[in-house]
Image: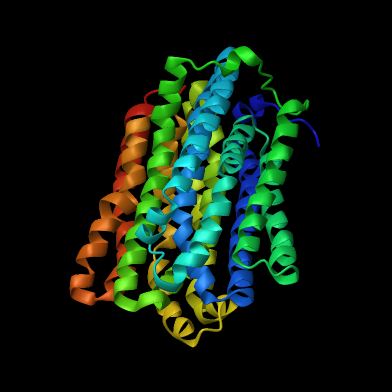
Length: 450
């Protein structure tokens, strides 16, 4: 594989460059989302529908802790992209070293905290009744691997910030493929049940960690750090923290949303409704994978060119990314609207779940095509180092609109009101993001175009 220079981010044609960056990211996210879907299918068919609900209960906790690595990675990668664009290698190296130190300290600390309060956290996130025991088994094993997962998430974003999307894609493919292979061995052959599902996930991320470690130690990476770079520096920590907090807040809201929705649905429909939400939740990454992939390709391009004051290229990549993501999301949207019954039957043979999932699935994904503007618009502000607007726009979709709607709508529509809250919040957050992005382009990028 040929080595890619970060300078390509500021010189190659935007359309070609975005495809080069986004296609590997999209493939990686697609395979990862398919892995999640197939993993759920395996668990549902080999263990049972209660196991699907148990995994869904654990997701908020593991997502939040793993999100520490992602937050540190994205926050630091924004700095690294802009530093490389400004030809400031010392700052890029110091930032990467500080990312490693912060990832280790936070993920280990929160893993210990999560294991200590296991019996309190699982019921709080909806793990009640028959769901509790399998959820606890899965939860404890997953948390053992959280520090490794944190390093994988952090390292992946740094690889992309260097302009090496293919290696970042491989880092995502390894745990996805490995998890399916280990699922088959641990669950189907060795009959380890929930413990097998958990060890399959943890083991696959250990393999990915080894690959990422090799990447940074090899000649493929420009970031060659030494021990002095690991020493924490206050200004860099503050910048990583302000930008990374956007990602952490988003993941925290996702965790809180899972908690609230799981408990609300359990109140209306019991374990069946929680299982339906688990299936819809698993599908969400697949539904949005084109947008997520293009967003990940977009961020280093926008950050590098903003750092090198090429604002005309920043505007071009904004428009191109939104256009590409909208078209691809529309294709996925059509599949979800036309074939929800078929998709549901992949996950379970439970007649009650099959009967109610399709309608709720259609409501949950009704506004998918317009989300390209919302997600890419929020990502722009993070990419260029504007933490506050990035934070506000990131929180609009779930914290500001969805959670209040989730409590208001059931007063009039019952359980259906919860599902209707998804597209309404998507539309409102997209309108708000569009306003701020248009204002930013007019006041900042147009005035500073060369």
